[in-house]
Amino acid sequence: MKLFRVVVGVLLSVGCFTTAHAHPHTWIDMQTRFLINDQQELTGLDLIWHFDDVYSASILEDMKQKNEPLEKQYQEFARDSIDYMAAENWLTRFSMNDKPIQFQKPTSYKTEKYAHHLALHFILPLKVPAPVTGNHFNLSIYDSTYDVEMLHHKLSAISVTDNAAANCSIKLEAPYPLEDLSAYATSLDITAQSDDDLGEMFAENVVLTCN
Image (cartoon, rainbow, N blue to C red):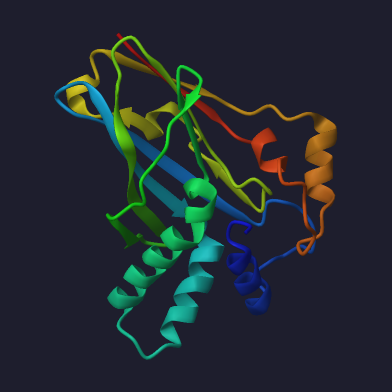
């Protein structure tokens, strides 16, 4: 399964791309909040993924053609997105002290409408709460095929709950792919199948450390 293969099909069908080349095809600006309870345990991630204006416009236009209330379609879009990404762990790679952490399926999710774009807002709960004191966590969120670029862009887009803010620090490490790798991604046709690990080369790394 490839992330948002359906998205690419939709955009092709409505002619939203100005070029026949280049990965990525869709862009997501992310916001992440680490959810830490009063026992200083990490319980989950609060995620907001802002889709680019072109993709959002294509989805909204498709919704307008259907004889269903928009609010119902928004919820269906959120549910379908969550279900579609389940097989790829919601594109989220997360570890504590370099050991992988597992998630449960989100039960809280919704589509949010902004002035010119849509956003998917969901909470990704950990299967088992993780103690934060004295531990460090690494988070990377990406589409493995790089059909979709997913970035926080700035440190202020990442936070922890207020009760842990004084004891935790966050570092955002930007990706620095090699020039030939960037050229390869740019050369790919929109319908081309990229390597499954291409997205990792363009992924950010978020480091959470708590005292």
